[in-house]
Each structure stands twice: as structure tokens, then as C-alpha cells.
Image (cartoon, rainbow, N blue to C red; front, side):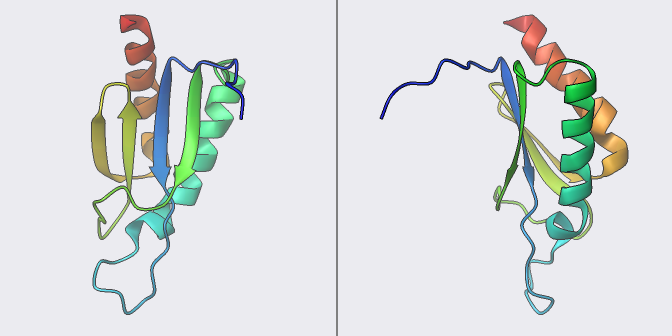
Length: 102
């Protein structure tokens, strides 16, 4: 193992975890997460932020909304639920604010 050289200033984790239809925890993340993840990736690339702001698809973040998905922002340890593709711009603004504070 060796240490990598890339050091993101902030990282958004987007839950894309799909659950079975009979799972009582629902699957809002599996329904909305992939579209939000794709929108965030597109926007970070378009804005030239891909090396400073990482967007990562992940499994369960501990809260399973009925609609939308869960998103966390590190290093701020902020957590949003019921996020949708339309929220991508607002999430990126919040992540950029986190970068500016460092």
C-alpha cells in the first residue's frame, strides 16, 4: 500500500443503495440516488472541480428516506435526506462553501 497524492477539499457521499421492494426501510436512495449522483458528477466536471470536490456513490448512510436519497458532506459532517436530482446545484454550492472555509 502507498499513500495517494490526491487530496480533496470536500467530499459528497450520495447513497444509491437499492433495497428489495418488500424491505420496510424503503428504497428512496435506490430510486433517486443514481440520478443525483450523475448530476453532481456532471456539474463538478463542468465546473473544473473534480480534483477538489469528490462525489462518491455509496451504500447506506444510515437513514433511508421514503423519497429522495441521503447525502453527506465531509469534512463538515452535514447530512441531507430526501435529496433529488434538482438539488444538485444547492448541494454543490454547500460543498464549495466548505472548500472556501478551509
